Length: 346
Ligand code: NAP
Ligand code: ZN
Ligand code: ZN
Image (cartoon, rainbow, N blue to C red):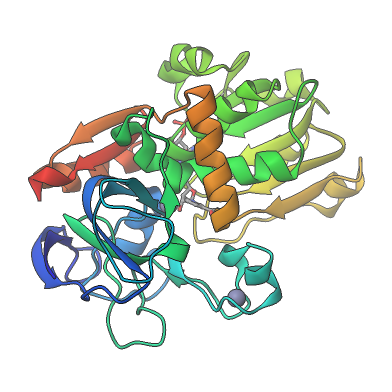
């Protein structure tokens, strides 16, 4: 299937127009026209090899929304015209204990990523969502509620689920005091979800100009972490801290704001190790944990929750020829709050 997109041909190079073939549909495949694809900071980390060696040519993009145009003979759950979403992985082993529990992101054989790898059991490079067409096995796609605007839905497929999953796992609800570190693509979804579930939300940001937006998204408090003694006012305060920061950071002042039995969840992936004082964890039985995206059942649950509560990502819609500028602006924390590419412009 002839497809047009944008690719990085070699690490750290700008993205350029790129034509390629997608596979023809097999019995369980769904073909769709992409409407919007979000730009996640993980796309930038991989295009620039900040996580180690990557596979090129790379068509990034794992926040993908479109409309079904074709279905294979054995497809059960999708019909032509349905709105469909694809996230960070396109396959997994299906047999391990995690896959059987619907935790495909933790597949014991490793999930098959939407790009920067090969399709499962194949020599074909998997190409992601910065393109006009997609083919997906129906078991790894989700249905998008019809009442939601597709541009604001695209970022839910990674940024949304990546915050929804830990918020559910750590049982955020009325009475919870939650902090979100970094008001970017992931962080702003964390604020919306935690606030919708009744928590008191505090944003910990290094960008003073984001305060009024944070309040509109549902945050009660906004803290500028550039001020050196900010953490003193929140000593032993939070039950849960969701760290979405994409850059290296000293976790110490943040850990000091956790209550007894509180947890800081590492979600951002800067590529360098954190250093932690044992004493800070011992004092108050604090935990540091991690969380990676979410499985297919939870992805569908999150989209249905967004459909019922009218939750969308705040987006800046761009055309394909703006992707390189969008990368630089994302790295500079200058986006409100996710770039999405209009796939008609590929
Ligand atoms: P993003 O839109 O760029 O947001 C990151 C935010 O971090 C920025 O908006 C900024 O918030 C803050 N920040 C950036 N540089 C900083 C610095 N030098 N010091 C302090 N704060 C800084 O990125 P994203 O797409 O949300 O992704 C965030 C991270 O999560 C990335 O590392 C990405 O790879 C990772 N990620 C992880 C998963 C997972 O499954 N765990 C999934 C997707 C992405 P303020 O301006 O408010 O300070
Ligand atoms: Zn992502
Ligand atoms: Zn598995």
